[in-house]
Length: 524
Image (cartoon, rainbow, N blue to C red; front, side, top):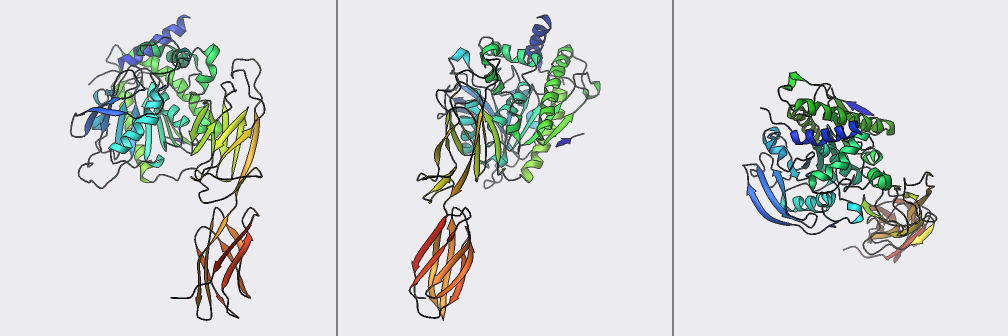
């Protein structure tokens, strides 16, 4: 399921950083919190620069916000949002200053947000178990997105939110989209380092933290002891999570292309080495998506290196793809299949808390509104989306559970003893248990109208939390059958004798007995 697309200022620091890792290879928590905008500068008619104070970092960070052409002319219009993630040793202003972002986006009908990623791989850092700042993922997901949606006229939903990135930013865009597929409807990688399992790209990630004030392997830890943290962020390992996301995978092959303006800079040799490395990562990611049957656009541009000229053509094509997506975004998927290593996570409205005794490992959650499947170890607690407001009972795997007042249902799933050895640190593969639980709400019948009419009675019904395929209506000795769902349906019964009460009985779609009763009122 693949859709195949048919003035010099270099990203020299990107080339330098990853080329350094090439030489190496060849030679050998701030949680979600309120953030404060401490300053706003008008850079140009469409471009704003915000300074933001956040506990995700040890010092204020900056972000560029590009408003679409026409934003001020139509105060009633709301807009999609596109997040642009930069590469290693580039910053929030690289999109504007290096790529000419204002010109590239002059006709693009979306707000564009370009945050500062430094060299942090858009991740919350492990730092040998100390955690804490920098926390790039927490900042973007928990802080920046809500801030942008509150400050500007956005359409604040998944179907109108996209993310793309270049190089390290391509890794970041696919990583955040895979770890938060309920937040981004579309994602693109441009010459992205999207498979850290490849040795060259893994080395680049290991040393990247040293360009951001840290030590080697500060981001996820050493692979020998923390392989699971690497896997839990690597886009290729998380490819299944991206099913249902509109994906673009774009890359060139690392061969110089004078036809697009490459070849007149000494940096080009290094740029070609870098592009050759990310080319292999892009192929690996593409092949994994293809193996899983995850729909995506694959665009191999052929010759081209890690240069501004190559990036500009890819960005132009990427934004055109996003524009088409925004014009007719598909509905959110009804089911999902999601893997995570996090002890607590929220996805598609579900909250998941793993067994606190469990070592770090993957947990798999598959579900929809009628069943949920969990694969892992230990006692896992799940909380559903707010599907059951107003209901009294939901059967979870045949066991009745009472929903909370907010309509959410919390229950535990026993997956056997919690594994005590961290995944990937043993030669023996862990044995995960899988449980599937059917979610069967007990529907409630509501009689919305019960009144006398000439020679009869007018009865209207609706069901909450399900359907009643053959509800039986009784008014005195008169009766009728009616299929009842969420939308009210009515039936007029001819009465043989005067009656005072309406009784409705039946069974919902799961076989639960249902009943409702109401007094028959006089017509006004």
